[in-house]
Image 1 (cartoon, rainbow, N blue to C red):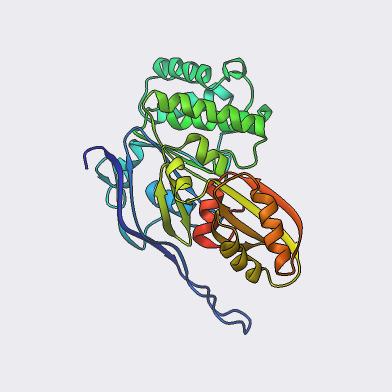
Image 2 (cartoon, rainbow, N blue to C red; image 1 turned 90 degrees about the horizontal axis):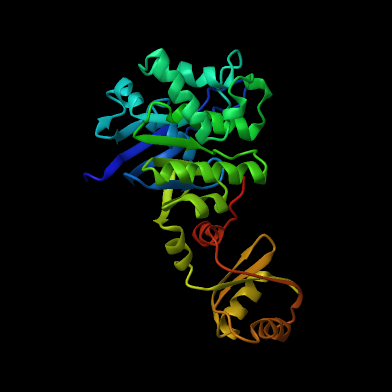
Length: 327
């Protein structure tokens, strides 16, 4: 469609297994991305949410020409990424997981060099570099060596560098991994400002708060496949409950308790055992928690702890996969 800036069809990446070594058998091949059909609309922030190993970074690698697909097609702005990688690179900006700034240059020189690489004249590159430093709150560090920047500052500089040549598409791979909460929020604000100016962004993350705060749509990904796709609010509504109760109890098999609570508590819509406790999806009403305790005790379980939360993107992930969303 005309408003789709990214489109993939059956995109897959299989890494071959290792050869036998020292009498040990060959390691099996790894399917990192499995027949992925994905579309990103112009002007949105699209999030790939999932644990490490879900295939998020490999997906970005294929879309940014760093990883060659095993099969399938990928197009960015109508450009075939596999057939015309040099042209594709002109319309994308990439912020990788690792710091790739040139430590031999100052902060502003990193941006000037990038601008020159994409065809800017020296004077224009310098003007654009200082304008970009203002936008990412680094104007006062223009002449500083890159090595003097904090982790959050360095990440903001990499965003500025990636967007210097005004790409149609900005890719961010785990953009706030390892940052402290204050630096994370500062980067969120900057990305939201660029988005407000019309920048299309695709980011990967395993932070559910990041996906919830930033993304227009979120694809929940695991084992190389997209399990669900919607707005953050739509994904949370799909749980079919407005309250999540986590029940820790002594007394035996928790699967038995989970089945009993669904039958005995009228507000409960579903239950499953996650990491040694029962997760009960419910509709909140007065007296809900005492009824959960009473129902548990009726079948010989002693409740040791109760916690109550609203549905989150992690709740959706748990419901889809039966496991928590972790690093």
